[in-house]
Image (cartoon, rainbow, N blue to C red):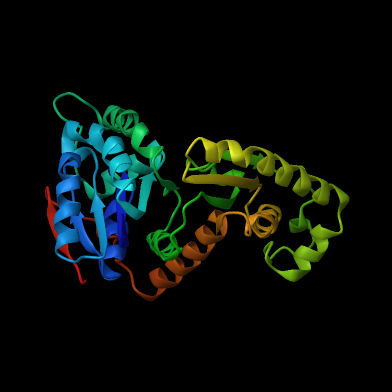
Length: 318
C-alpha cells in the first residue's frame, strides 16, 4: 500500500463548483487532471506514483460519458493500494444550477438534441447518485465561492484516518435543508436567543449565547437525545463502510441554536472519530457582507467560470 500518496477525487453535478475546487487543489500544489475518463484512473495513478508524485487531484464527471459508471469500482480498487484516498462530491439544487447556467450561457453536457436544461440536470443527478454515495458531499446551492474554497481546504488538511469522518453542519430552515445532509435534526422548538436584543447580533459560538442556552433544561434534553441517537447508530453506519456522515442541525436562521448544538456535538464525538464542523448560514451571511463591501467599492465584478477539456492537466508541483 502506498502510504505517501494522497489522491483527491472531485466529482459532482455540472455547474456545482468543481472548477473552483480544482483551482484550490492546484494552488495547494496538487498535480491536477480535469475531465479524466474513469477507465483511465488506475493507469494515471500508477504512472504518477512511478513518477514520484505524492499529491494528486482528479476530476471525473459526466463529461466522461458512459465510463463514469465504472468509477465506484475504480475507487474500491484504489482504496486497497492508496491509504489516503478522498472523494468530494459537489451538488446543488436545480434552481441554483439553472441560474448558474443562465448567467454563464454555457451548455449543459447532457442538454443535447431536444433535451431541456431541467431534464439534463435530472438525468445527470440520477446517473451520478452512485458516485455521490462514495464521498464527502457538499451542497453549494447557497455557498459563496470563497466559502467553498475554505471548506475544500479544511477537507484536504484533515489528517488521514482509517475510519469515518463525522460532520456536524448548522443551517437555517429559511434557506432550505442542505442536500448533503444524511441526518437532519430540527431544533426550532427550542427558545430562540434572537428575541433577546443583546443576543440577536451574536451567534451560537459566542459565550453570552452559550450561557443562555446551557441553562435551559429543554436545550440540555434535546442535545442529549441527539447525542444518544448518533452514538447508538454510528456503529451501524461504520459497519456499512461509510467514510463520511453529515449530521445537519437546523433552526430558523442558522445563527444561534443550531450553531451552539453543532459545536457541542462536535466536542462530544471528537475523541471517537474525525470531526468537522460547518456553519452554513453563518458562512452565507459573512459572504453576503463581503460581497456587499466589494460591490460598493468596485462595480462590475464577475464570477469567472470555466471548463476543462478532456484529460486536461492543470499544473502541479511535487
